[in-house]
Image 1 (spheres, rainbow, N blue to C red):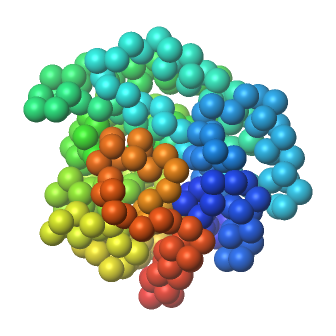
Image 2 (tube, rainbow, N blue to C red; image 1 turned 90 degrees about the horizontal axis):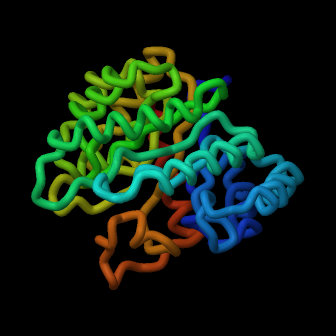
Image 3 (cartoon, helix red, strand yellow; image 1 turned 90 degrees about the vertical axis):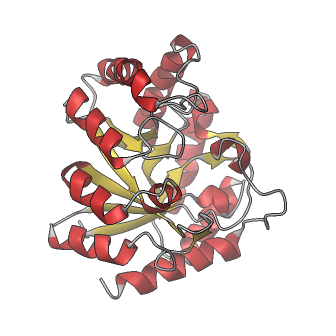
Length: 282
């Protein structure tokens, strides 16, 4: 296995699977992190639809690095049982798509309230996810996202220690940490033993604007160099966020600029080029 395997959220290039496959081929990429496909969120695919999509992926030699699910992107105060049922459905999708990883989150915290007061409920819900996944080879990847419980390195670490499972690992998202005013070098130092997957987007502390890898304050090059020196083997999944796309507002908790330019193959290409140039220096 190569130390760094490129993947990406190709729904930022096209809503339709065919367009996604074309942009991946144009950049010699063999993996995608599936989030949106044919105008549906991946978690909303029926099993029959998933099998049809898998057939198209197989025909083009494309594999899934992870299912980019929305699991855990509800309020911590929302009813959990329907969400747990959705998780079990996504487990079935992961089997169809022959991927080991499901990207997930640790629940939005009510605005103005302290995240730590919800720690026990977050841990209990994540334990339920792990119990449902027991006996499978699926690894649940927690992404540090803005406004959820695990938006800081310290609370990500709290989850790692509390859950203590080989089926719970971390995605390290540079831009999300920057947008939460977290020092990414300190975050990686704390979390590196459990980081098995990187989301590649960068951001600026001033204004929190997302920029291509290496053009922001996320210390992407420094951290990837350290990961390489540590023997990291795994996926670098491009999540450009350089333009608007279907479902973006929902992903960002409806905090998206109305005047934002549309995403597409061009902006996806900018993100790919920036990462490849950065990796030449790592």
